[in-house]
Image (cartoon, rainbow, N blue to C red; front, side, top):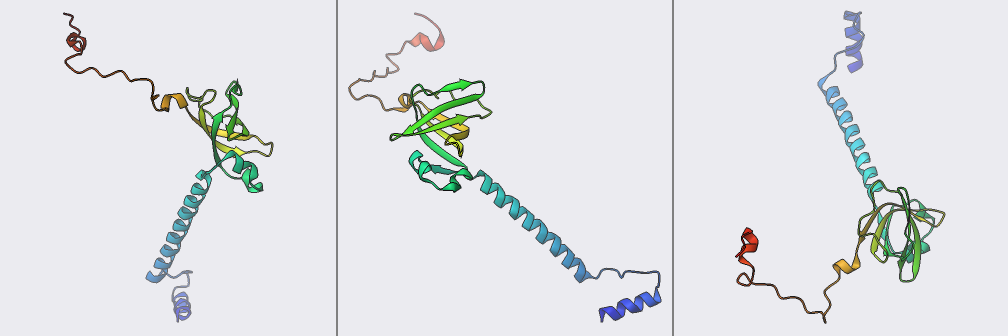
Length: 176
């Protein structure tokens, strides 16, 4: 029936090569455009999550993984081996140790390592494991174990001064 209308209109108006769009074809085109946009946004969201996803593994697990380890974004934690830190410009090389397992790490990030990154510090490296057996980190985090350790039991803490024991002129800058 649609074809007959088109042939009739082309016979009546020979210069008219197309027929104006009907309401239903507008909805179909709008639906197709909406579907394409939704699929594109879904694809971008999925690939973004896949790229930012990282797996936490121990050094022992890292050495025991199959070839898929070379394509994944990983996070590995351990203690910085004393004497292993070597700085060359923006490049930082060190070794992580965890329960007797060692992992050489090369950090080539854009930020300087944190101040707490020292020998025996706990460190977390994020990056990828290379076929050369070296972990290539793009991010490192560190904390100084002594700074966060609980206070010793046999070292008594200094009692806090009460307001009546405090120097009254200290807060105002006035001396007696």
